Amino acid sequence: MPPRIARATTLDIRRRRVRAAVIVWLLFASWPLLAGNNYVLSLGVFFFINMLLIGGLNLVMGYGGQISLCQAGFFGLGAYISGVLSLRYGVPPFLGVLLALLGSTLTAFLIGLPALRLRGHYLAMATLGFNAILSVLFVELVPLTGGPNGLAGIPPFALVGFAFDTPARFFWLAWSAGLVLMLLVASLLASRAGRALRAVSGSEVAADSMGIDPFHTKLKAFMFSAACAGVAGALYAHFNQYASPETFSLSTSVLLVVMVALGGWGHYWGPVLGAALFTAVPELLHRFQDAELLVFGIGMVLVLLYLPGGLAGAPHRWRKLLGASRHSEVVPVARLPR
Amino acid sequence: MDQFANLLLSGLSTGSVYGLVALGFNVIFKSTGAINFAQGEWVMMGGMVAAAAYAAHVPLGLAALCAIVAVVMVALFSERFIVRRLAVQTPLAVTLIMIAVAICTKSLVMLVLGKNAFDLPGFTGSTPVDVFGLRVHPQSFWIVGVAAVVMLVTHWFFARTILGKAMRAVAAQPEAAALCGIEPRMALALSFALAACIGAVAGVIITPLTLTSFDHGTVLGFKGFSAAMLGGLGSLPGAMLGGVLLGLLEALAGGWISSHFKDAVAFVALLATLFWRPSGILGRGAVDRV
Image 1 (tube, rainbow over the protein chains, first blue to last red):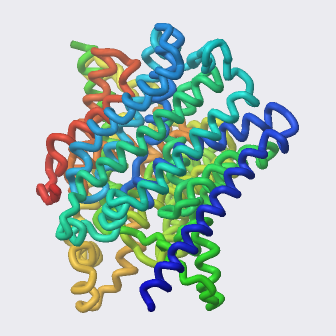
Image 2: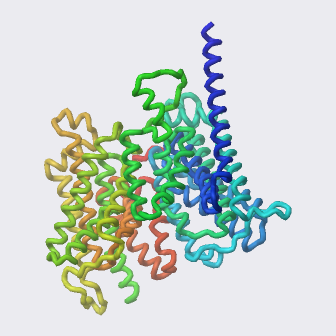
Image 3: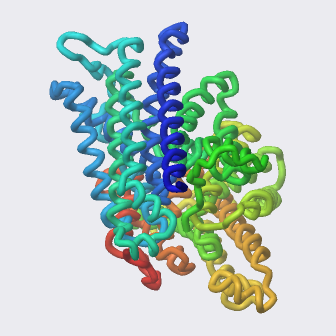
């Protein structure tokens, strides 16, 4: 009976994917054992924070087909909301994360409402402008944000007397945040909303005719990505206990877009690879710091020209080139939406 | 009153530069539908190459020519070996690859010419000229004059010459233009060369007034982009109008409200345009609402 066979294969694929995910997250969990010192351990924390940033952006870019140039801005918004509230008003950091999430989501709603109503790449333009405005505000609202010197002395997370103030303690918080994001994305992509998002990126007109509202779908994706960035910002602020406006500049937003493209946009594991690159490459190039931008730039050119699915799309592409169809698995190949 | 006139003058000269950057944006936007992130970097590179050549004792005029040629070569290289090799040239793909090109251009200029700020002398000295009791840097006249000339020449090029008309035909209908014997790829290369040339000129004329270094291009590019939006994306006279308007707004806001928030003015104008009149002041209103 063909239908049963087909069902068995999809189940197999599902099982294989779950198994892969469990292995990957166990490997991530072994980082504290592998890391020799606190510095290397803290790189692990930054890896998960970057994963939140890039994972959220991947939904907008890879599945929604829109460029957002404000991911660093929302990152900063989250960091300053939670940082300023806890430092100046004594709000507990865990509540601060929630407020950061709400604040950045609401802001994204207000930006997306007019920008996403227009067909074309107006979100890129609106977010570009908004990130630039946020940067100016972070620098100039000195009494609140500490201005160009940054916001110092942000308190760490604490739970009934237990402070997450060392990389070893914070690592598990960041690890769980990354895991929650990847689980959310997986369930989202498998849900009706995720299918709607992919349909919209394929063809807005076709999606519209199937009863999917492209505007609402893209708006939700954009708000979700801002929420991720907000949480990432709050985590960053309470881990680093310091926030400087440069971290949240337009150039960081541009680099995050680069990371989505390098990692593999529209691929589930793309943001993980993107985050790994974004965390590791600057460390590896410590001695040739000036070359970092050039490496990212050339990498992006090469990926866009020869590997449109990014690094995460590479295995599938090679398998296809070699002509081996061992798996009947259907991998969503990233397409460039019109 | 004097202060007001001074602000107007400085707004007019920075505004003319924004207008030139916006003009470059529009040329590429018309032919590809993409946002050219490298435009600001081309402006920076124009200024940097001219200043570096001048520092190596090349005469000023020749240094400017070197800069324009160098930037046009870089743009043509980017078009021929990067943009044209894209499998599908959708606006999104071209925009993304231009982000990468911009990053590469910026870091290459930094690696070759260093991180120091460069300077050029004013084309006719730097002693302020007295105009109705105002002391004006002579370079301001050069900036406004050159910007106006470039604007007029560009307009003439698209309206009168056969090449310009061919480019407009390709922008309007690539297939139909190809049927008429116009090579669309030639038009694309030409638009890159033209945009880069305009960018390089902008870089050369602004450098005596503001200095330049490798990281000046990005912000200039974004402001020029805001000017293009304000005037109407794709509209050539709109670029100049948007640029000058933005320059004036920025100068007045800086002088009257607070110099701290001056840099935000361009982007507030960008957002305001997007929200209330996405087609810009002189745009044709061809913006689809979903």
